[in-house]
Image (cartoon, rainbow, N blue to C red; front, top):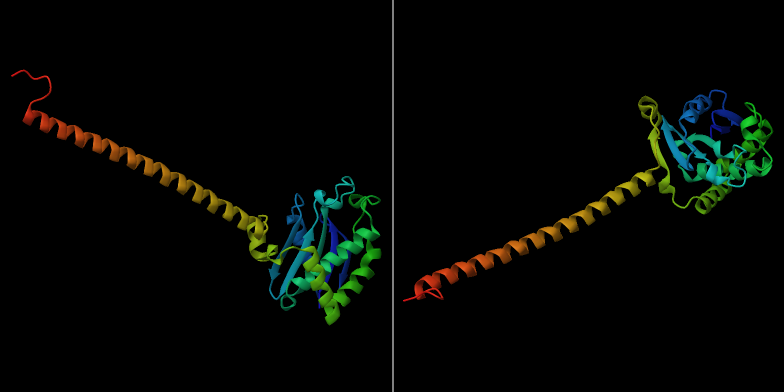
Length: 234
């Protein structure tokens, strides 16, 4: 079962539900939220002890019809036990995102103007979906179907230890981005290698041709000296 879930605009938590008074998820969320980059959509997982902190971060490109609403800075976050995996929590996040945007349409809502817990009316929905997706088998199956439909590849979700992230103070990119960059570097390396081999081949061929010319010339000289060079008078 999930421990805690919230929806935030930037670093401002708009709505939240906690299943345990002793949960540390709220404090973890306050540490993670300032590090989230909304320049592009993100789906990330942080690890902390026996818990996973999963989130989906929107970007302005997700809401082109309402660029001034601030919806591009929304984050949907949930903390869950590690043994729950990733598909169920991300299915839950996709569901709360759909419900939240339906209840607070970006075209009609200025999220940047909402105060802390300004969308507290959504707390009950968080609780309902948390129970459905975390406590029942049917809810978990729904979550898996949802996340399969909405997230093309779960391997895009990267897991990183939150303590290391906080110590380094750097933003963690999507694993798929790193993989794409590595793949691009490998392709560039192969292209450069082929080009280098081609240039070396032509260089070797020119050297071989020059060597043949020199050998032929030397043979010509030896034969000429032995038989008399053309144009030599007796």
